[in-house]
Length: 81
Image (spheres, one colour):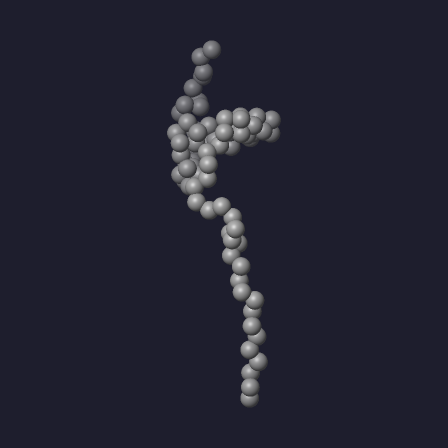
């Protein structure tokens, strides 16, 4: 008639002891190393999103909602040299 009660160890949060909140901005050298890494791996979309984020000071959550494609009017025009 007596039920055994099992005690669980206390749950430890995944972010305990980690830095939460606003992060410091990237340094210029870090930005260039990311750009070079993306260029070497031919990640054009990721490089374009990185440049857009830096130029317009967008946050990551703002960039996720953006959509781009190959059918953009700007991409179909010939580029003068």
